[in-house]
Length: 568
Image (tube, rainbow, N blue to C red; front, top):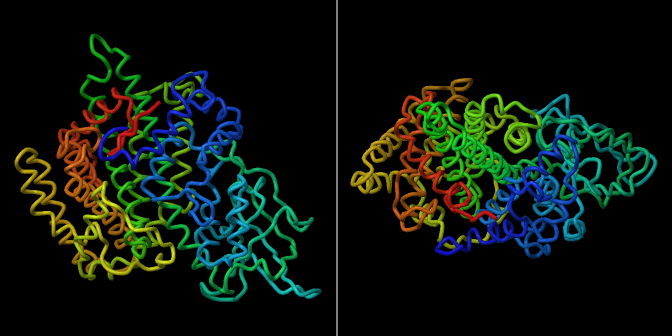
């Protein structure tokens, strides 16, 4: 890469070159190989080995654990380039991120060293929290950790549901009940599963629609002996650590969603450019061009939201109980919309298992994206997790505008990430929306010179955010507040896009000249339509520049991102 965004995308660009052209049908790390593995339900052994050979599996580990992590925005791009080839690259190499974050938050030095050594060697530590009977109602979980009546240690009894890599992991971070009521009734243990006896049953692999070949298992414990030194942290603090860690997981899961959408749109544009209907290319017909523009706007908006969230967690981790959930919701929903519109363009070819574009790859992308959408929590549970925080959020004073400039200027250095600052409830005003008033007027004035539609949308966004506190006050508890939480998520996303354009207008975002605002108007048009609950097709004229942006990136062999990583 060349230019001011070099450092941010260099690791991703290097990985691309190492893995080779994804379109090459003979490439074992390409699209065709991913489709074949999916059809056969095979684990991506060769791809995972190749990624470990580059140190990919160390990218989420801190330096003091022997990892190569530098910043989440850099990691997001790196993981996305692997996921665009096969989403299974993420669980095969990084599924331990939740357990590792929990141990980093409250594990002993010895436990941290144990986990670090295991992960550096390519092993896996599973995260076992959910139970089939209770889903997202974590306080109702029943798996229990009790004193061993026959010895000095503990006994673990119960079943954990859908544990990723549950059949092949060497260790597991398990959250179990040690009290009777409230969030302080749960304690974590770090189990060495290699030493477990017959009291552990990993069960058969659980088949899933997406991520085929990745083993999920129901771990059953029948009085499993647990030495006292395997308890992580203090008794009663496990649920707090787990909920904090999942904020990080929600953020990194957006890389998987973006990878699926990038490939889906790439396949669709290639097909629509070659397919003819009458005398016209399919891509040039009004309906398909409109649908492609909406898909492009959805993806570019999701990219901006994920990228800025990945920077925001460095500066304002105490806000991520809201920020991370909002980003997860918008990215997952926008990606689902983009892929659905791609499927409408592909029509019959979208439903062929082995003969569609990419040898049936599109179906895999649909299924994988659907699983990522719910892999850490359901859509409703994700919204509900910050619904109760909306009243306090709406009343909080605005934050420092300087913090926003650091987050949204992609070439600005970031402070080190500090997981100890993660919190269960957001402190202060949401940074993207809370500091928007400081830049909304100047940004609208600047946009009015060459992009009047984008300027009008910026003013509309600011007006909607000014009205939000009153709407929250009038809503009261219940469904109306959940609906407002979703509306807030889309407005938050629009604020991220406007802030990104303003703070980074000196940079060649999406490979376009600095200050180009076509992508911004398209993203604002899409996001404000979603915030209002209307179909983006009603304002399709606003979205056309998104397709132009994506087509230029496609022709140049670049990632569909504000940081246009060159593809192999």
